[in-house]
Length: 171
Image (cartoon, rainbow, N blue to C red):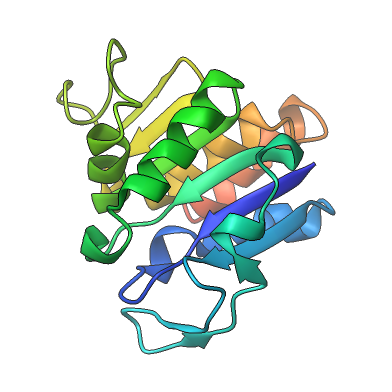
C-alpha cells in the first residue's frame, strides 16, 4: 500500500519533511504526486519531481494521503475534492496540515468530524482524518506515524517524541 503526498507549487515542505523521514526509515512506499505529474516548486524554494499525476494513482492502493499547506488554489478542484471523498469512503488515512486542512474542508471530508477548524487545538485525529496547524508539524508527523503503526513499540514512540518534540539528545 502506498503513502501518497499531494504536492503543488507553494507546498510547505517543512510541514511534511519529518513525516517523510519517519516513512522513509520504516520502508513505506512513498509516492509524490502532483495534479499533472510535473515538478513543483515548494515554498522553501525546492524543486521537486513528482512520481506521477494524481489521476494515475490508484485509490485502491493508497494507505494514507497527505496534503501539506501552501496556496491550495491550484489543487482546490472538483477532481481533487472527488478523489478525497473516494479515499474517505474507503477509510484511507487522510492528513492535512495548515491550508491542507482547508482543502479537506472544501471537499467535505471534515463534515461531522472534529478538526483544527472546529476545535481550538493544534492537532486533531478524528475518524482516520488528521488535521494540524502549521506549528504542529512535529505532532502531525508523530500522530500520523502512530496511526500507520510505524513505531516498533512504546519505547520507540517515546524516544521519537523526546528527540523530535522535546529536543533531547539521542542516547
